[in-house]
Image 1 (cartoon, one colour):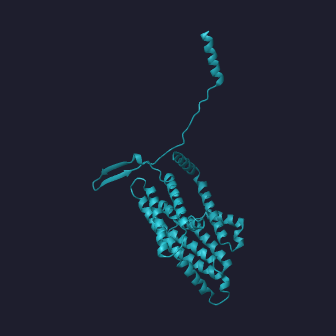
Image 2: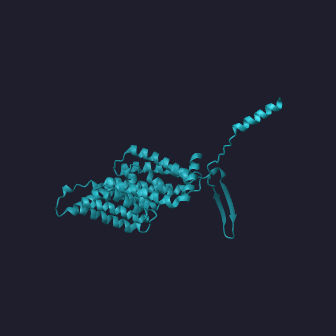
Image 3: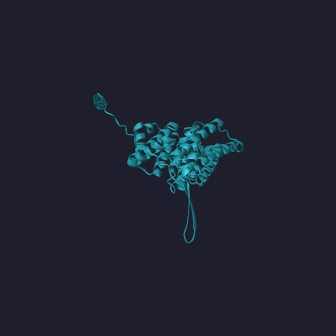
Amino acid sequence: MMTLYVVKDFLQRIYGKYHMYITPALKLILSLVSIITINSKIGYMDKLKNPLIVFLLAVVCTFMPNSVTVLILAALIVLHMIAHSLELAAIVLFMFVILYLVYFRFSAKSCYAVILTPMAFALNIPYVVPVVIGLLMGPFASIAMICGIFVYYIVKFTMGYNLEMIGDEEGAILEIVKYIVDNALFNREMIAYMLAFTVTVIVVYAIRRLSVDYSWLIATGAGVLTNIVLMILTQIVLTVKVSTLGIVLGSILAIVVGVVLFLLVFSVDYTRTEIVQFEDDDYYYYVKAVPKIAVTKPNLQVKKINAQKTRHVAESNSEDEE
C-alpha cells in the first residue's frame, strides 16, 4: 500500500509538471480507442477505417471540447449507418439529435460517461461503470450513462437488422422504425441495465459523501451488492437473461477498481482524524477533519568508503603499534 502512495505522489508531481502534454495525450488515446471500437463494431464504410483518417479524426477530437468529441463520434456512427441503410441512418441521426438537445448541450462535463459506457459494454466490463461514476462524478452523470447504454443498444440492434427482409417496399421505413422501437427503445435487457446502474450510482454517491471512515470502500461494496441484487431482480421481473458469471466477474472487477480509486484518489489517514468545534454569533460549527496521506519517495544516500584510504589508515595504525 505504501508503494501505491509513493506512485501516486510521483504521478501527481509528473502531471503537475507536464499536464499541458499529458492531458492531450490521454485524450488522443481515448479518441483513438473510441474510433477504432466504432470501426470494428460497425465498419460498413471502409474509407472511415483508413488508418490515416482514424488518426486525423483522433487528433481533431484531442483539441476539441468534450461535447464536440461526442458529436464527432456520433457522426462517425451515422456515416457507417449511411453505408448500410440511408433510412436506418436517418432514424439513428434523429435519435442522436434528440439526445443532444435534451441533455448534452446543457452538461458537457459528463460527456466522458457517454463515451466510456458503450466502450465498457463492448469490452464486456459494464459493471465497473456505475461504481466509477458514483465515486468520481455524481447522480446527475447517470443521465449520461443512460444515454451511453442507449447508444450501445442502438448500434447493437441496427447492426443486426437484415435489409434483405424489406427490399424496396414502400413500408420499409416504417418497418425499420418498428424494429428499432421493439428491439432498442423498449428492449428489456437495456431497461434492466439502466435501472440497476442508475440506482447503483445513487447508492455509491450517497454513501461516499457520508462523513464516516472508509466511506469510499463502504460505498464500493454497497454499490456492487446493490447492483448484483437489482440485476437478479430485473432478470426475474423483466424475464431477461444476463450472464450470472459475467455479473460475478464484473462485480469483482468493480471492487478492485473501487479500491484502487480509493488509494489513488481519496487517500486519507483516518488514524489522525480530528473533530473541531467553533462558533460565531449565529451558529455552532462541528467539523470533522481527516488529513490526506502524503508520501514522498525516500531519498536514499549511499556513502562510499574509499578502499585505498581505508587500507592506508590500517597500515599507519600497524606501524604505530610496532
